[in-house]
Image 1 (spheres, rainbow, N blue to C red):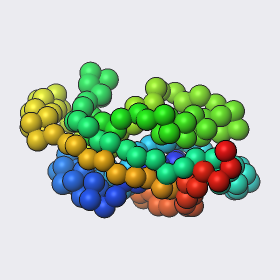
Image 2 (image 1 turned 135 degrees about the vertical axis):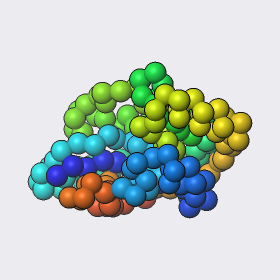
Image 3 (image 1 turned 45 degrees about the vertical axis):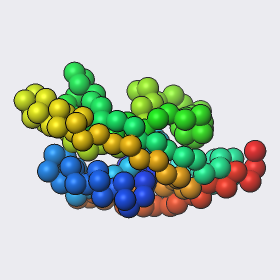
Amino acid sequence: MKYGVVAFPSKKLQDVANSYRKRYDPHYELITPHITLKDAFEADEAQIKAMTEEMAKVAKRHKPFTIHATRVSSFAPLTNTLYFKVDPTPELTAIHEDLHSDFFGGAPKFSFVPHITVAQKLSDSEHADIFGQLKMVGIDHEETIDRFHILYQLEDGSWTVYDTFRLTGDEV
């Protein structure tokens, strides 16, 4: 089965992201706006059980952290994806690194760019037009994240929560 690890922002920030996603993101109905902490990966029942136990330990090592969505950016020319850029704080980066230890399969394929996708799979002209509009509107949102989630993918391609881990910082 396919799994991934994410942090969900508040409903307020999700609503802002969804106001664009419902028009410009074909994955709008498949997953809630999120910050990806670990990209999709395959695991069987035994592996996911061990991983969830280890993720609970990761959550105990980290305290809740603040995210700050500071601007609209793009992954172009790699892909015509637009997103709210989230400042990569030391706390957020540390959780990402913990979720990419050897236990969890090692280093990620891509550099960690914390973000919340608002548009993707756009044509070049759509990308240029929408990027210009979103840059003028901008984003400046700060909030605290106190948990992360492991999701699994259903047969219809949508994602749902498998388990939730509260960040406590109890074990440093």
